[in-house]
Length: 151
Image 1 (cartoon, one colour):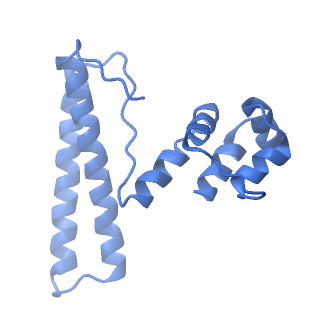
Image 2 (cartoon, helix red, strand yellow; image 1 turned 135 degrees about the horizontal axis):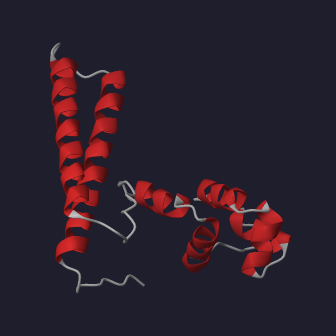
Image 3 (cartoon, one colour; image 1 turned 120 degrees about the horizontal axis):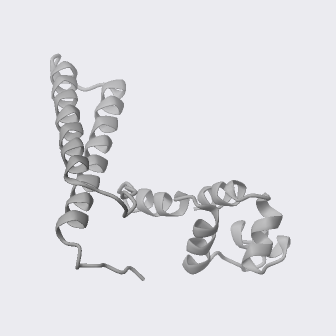
């Protein structure tokens, strides 16, 4: 988690001192929370606030990874169309073809080595991300009256 805090803080214009000011803390207060000094910790609320200020998704990525998952940023709501949906389906089909080919090559000798696994997992992440984006676009187009609020 500490690494995610550091990434977000350094991504913020002005870095550590500017983020401390944005949060209403002293620089020492921010450092104490990040490095868990003097019995201080970063609250989830504060971590999300820093993430929002920084425009980064580092905290969400860290939470997802720590939970055994992957963070997938969904597309922004805006001008989306059936053409966007079609493009996502096409991209998904391409990734499935790449996965199929890589899977056949990787399992041909009866085992998957570390490099092959890394390649397979990268393709898998692309497929998951694309599928999540595809479904988000679908819901944006075909369920316009359903607005989900996460708080």
